[in-house]
Image (cartoon, rainbow, N blue to C red; front, top):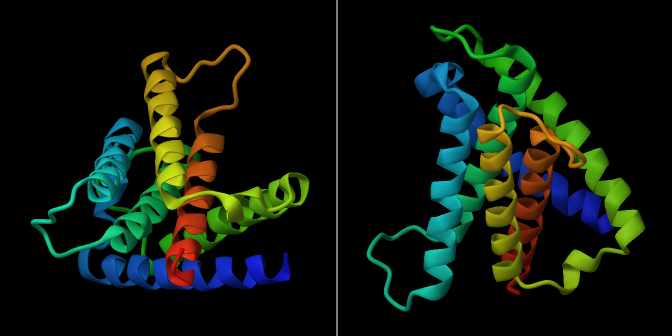
Length: 180
């Protein structure tokens, strides 16, 4: 599992670098987005990945990697929004936003390590397409929870679903980096 931790950190380092660079370019404009808007952004990326996996012809010269990175970063933003709430104007410096990103990713990585221990790294035997489908399933769950005003009866909440999507996307990127 030590390799998984190092591989996870390497994937997150790329995602974090893009997040920080976009914060430098755009500031925290994303802070005005409500959770359903972030969910829809993630959904668009997951749908595009599925399309790339199913279609023989690509008309835009971007592959799955950038979309999985986008899923990870949008999920981290969503976790920050859950904690801080939506604002009318950007309110976070790059340093503050990066600190929050790091906190959300650290908690999500610990969840991965705990689940990875219990599941015996089963994700290593999964296909990237299955991880994509699981992300889409989680998105449909989140949309339903959002439609239910955030209420669940027996299921985990929206935050747990965003964390799972981050971890599935990291697993997919590890697979893609290994050439699986």
